[in-house]
Amino acid sequence: MEQLEQRIQALLNLGELLGNYKLGNPSDSTLEKAVEAALANNRWFTEASICLMFEAWATALTKAKLQQWLAPYALPHSQPKTVALILAGNIPMVGFHDVVSVWVSGHQAVVKNSAKDPFLIPWMTHYLEAQTGVPQFRYVKEKITDFDAVIATGSNNSGRYFEYYFKDFPRIIRKNRNGIAVLSGHETQEELLGLGRDILQYFGLGCRNVSKIYIPKDYDLNGVFGGLYPHAAVMENNKYANNYDYNKAVWLMSEFDFLENGFFMIKEDTSFAAPIACLYYEYYDTIDQIKTMLQRDNEQIQCLVSHLRLPNALPFGTAQSPQLWEYADDVDTLKFLLEKI
Image 1 (spheres, helix red, strand yellow):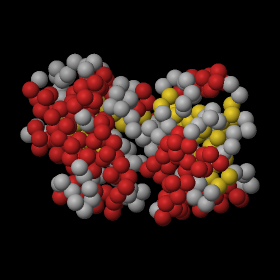
Image 2 (image 1 turned 45 degrees about the horizontal axis):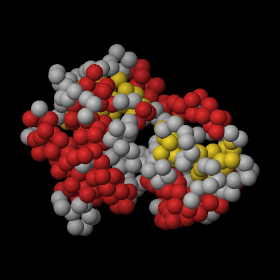
Image 3 (image 1 turned 45 degrees about the vertical axis):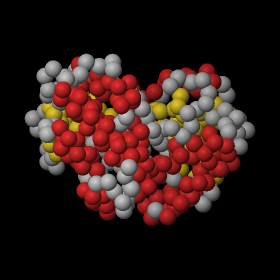
């Protein structure tokens, strides 16, 4: 238990450090170097997006929230094992929840970072290990070997490969999912601004970003555009602007009907995963129709944003700020680490 308390204290120290971080005036110069390296490595990462992720983790890594998260579990694991972590890199530190789960469980981890984000999470684990003096993480670029269980995140294609390759191991395999929103037509301006954040934070690249909305008949989509307007600066990012121009050209050549405001496009479509700089919408008639859809398409949905009384609905503006106990794909990672290995 003493080691567990040390690990929890290390998380609290990390949360405080991240909460105090400011680029150009950091509380730790090595963290600033890691941020600068991340910015140079991936042009989708910006100072604002990294600081936003730091702020989210600073909010999560508090004593009260850690206690609430860990209370139901028997920690640490009685027989530490080695867990292979294969991390995504679509937004900054996207796999850090898996890392923290392994950290508190007491397991070891062999980690394969995404080439899109090879600097931030290693800095975090090195910081944590320095707090306790106990190494728990090893990073590899080559094929992962010598492990007892796997947590892997990737696309649908890579997910099928992971399922086959790791079929003989206890595993969590995550594939493509998307955030959705169900609107009533009675959203406040504040809620629509929150929806804009849910759509365009991290340029819409996260699996929790809203890429599809369900709206009642005769809904005025100008309200959605109004909520998106504060994010017009996304066009200053060349990668986003190039995607916007490309997808607009494709839709124009395909003679699709769509609406756009100079930096974002909205089109009626039954699909869930919209391209970058795009949002799909679909009409609904009744709430029962929505509930049926949620059950039918559960494996394609990462999270739901709405003020309607729908299962597990999140408030507008919170899609990218999950609590520690809100697990990706609704699979309890910590329970897996403690009971399935």
